[in-house]
Image 1: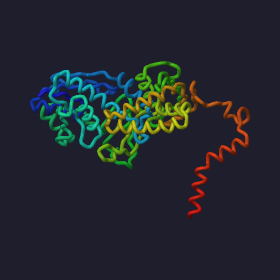
Image 2: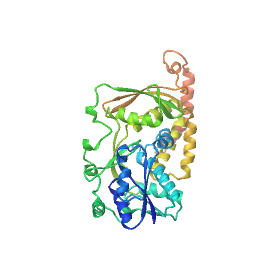
Image 3: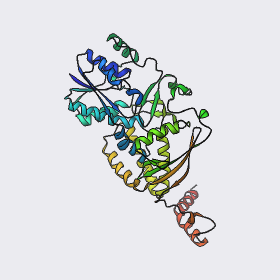
Image 4: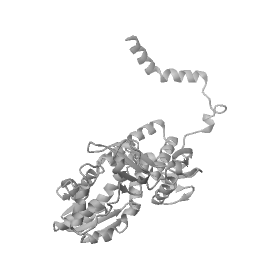
Length: 396
């Protein structure tokens, strides 16, 4: 049987490759680059050493930035108001690329390394079924065999390979948009994450004593420049991960509700994601009407939930994105931000579509409602609430 394997090069997918070869299958490995620089080192060589018939490394960084991250910014994608959806956002793209190779190579099955306890199994299986059909065989050895770390090590060693990553304390998933950290001491929800868990951010107390100022330029909701220099979105994200992370900002630590019914302690690093979403939200407040702003928040939450929960193929997502794009037509301008020792503040903003008027808001000059106008407005505005409060008060 010809099997296409979504291959990261880590312990689990390496063991799966060896196991599939043991079973006599012809294995084609696919690694999709979405910004995980460290994980890509030597991945093709490792795949062939483990017996891969053919290997593909697909560079999808720009596609990830332009088609996925851009929408995450426009939709202020934060699951449960905290997690910027880094892993969740990349999985549909990876699964799509794996499906494309499976079709090209005439594969009989696809395989992945997702566990039965995680969210990724939903994200992978759903997108694979969409692209390959409900009857196409999906092999998930970690889920099917309850493949533990010890079993994975044993499979590799009996095939003559030294298991990768045995020295690692944590389970890491990294891409352009975020770095997730699980396992080891982090599994204790009361324990502070050790400093060795972090790679993108310095401890706030060790950050520079001088603040970092940034001016993020937006066009139609998408970042296009930093401090006046235009560049691609992928470059903006990569640069901000380094700049902002070096000033101690971008760490997330929260209890997360997984799709499968478990609560998990999740630690992330996402300096660029948190910076850009905060800037975007602030610019939205400057240009939207109050009703647009409140409605947009409902769209943002629903979109974030669909992405996190593995429902990328849900038709409602496309409907939401059309509305998000329409609202973002007006989200252009500049947001000035200050990063200092683990904190981030918006300290200024400007947009040609802002309805803010300094002349109107000034208390000492400009337009001012008369006493009669103010009283009339208050009377009419509060009439429903006053009538209901009085009626219910009389009833005790």
